[in-house]
Image (cartoon, rainbow, N blue to C red; front, top):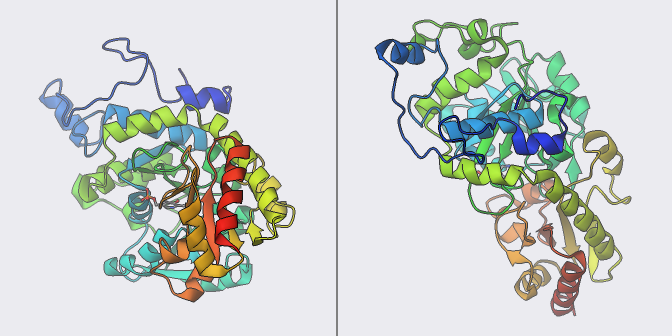
Length: 430
Ligand SMILES: *Cc1c(COP(=O)(O)O)cnc(C)c1O
């Protein structure tokens, strides 16, 4: 089908990017489990290698199954193109790679997935990149953190795990004034709940491992390109605006226009960094996207019901879910994610660290795992697991204090989940 804006989200999540297989008529997108693709002739091969013609060469760069997922997520996010990667963390590096160089920095929110805090505060230093962490509710501090070496602003739409929603409009206004791109990790919200490009995002990244796949089967990531940023407005982004020596001096922005970032991501990023999504993973994620809206509605409905129940319970100190009226971020839900605040939240258990450990041990339906965005309900005590590498101060800033557990509410019967939490809280808090 043609992926025009005339189709609604529920139609696009099933059809965007896909068409019956031209060779066999297969209705579901086949898993093209092939490393290489035969050139029609030597001229065809040369045109492909020169980026004069788009086609399939070798699956580190492009693969027909992965290409369907790229087009589907790009369409759902309202972007012009996308690059699928081997994981969400790979997608973050792939988003930054064309923008950064040794000595340059990215201004990032303190409220991020724990693994991202570690990637940005430690690992990217090995590339000579620097991340400056700022409270994104303090807009003056965000402005003050930007300097002439800053090449991007990075935040999460719904920040995992603290029930925080970023005021994307306010942050993108700052990015625009500084002539730098805003990158939004939309993993926790998904394009069904939040469309960051409509709030000024230049790039959107996902861990497709989570809700987009939706069943805890495969890791993957994607970078979606809005196509809206002028990479040639100044000399800040030479990888995209200046001649590329590895392609006979081709200038990506001049040649590919709004698709410059996407083409660079494939032709340079995947070719040379090799963080490629495999076709099996793309297949599972394509299956997941078909039911995204149905699942997200149920995640939101269940999360709200359970958060309200927990908030009233004596054994619980507080619940941080932006969908609750008590949340300081409640007003941002209508603006940033009008279909609901997602399926993730944290709550503080009376009795602190020890009670949290007892709680996760006593639950029967909830699984204690380091994952989120699954059809099944998950729980984790972040301070002793995902946020273990962080200092106590970083843990609190990220919403992962020692007395707090994070839940990823699944799509089971809400009453069963409440009963499970009830019995486990009885064992945890005496
Ligand atoms: C899981 C996650 C990541 C990292 O993704 P992987 O697929 O595990 O590499 C990044 N950001 C958020 C918000 C996540 O939930």
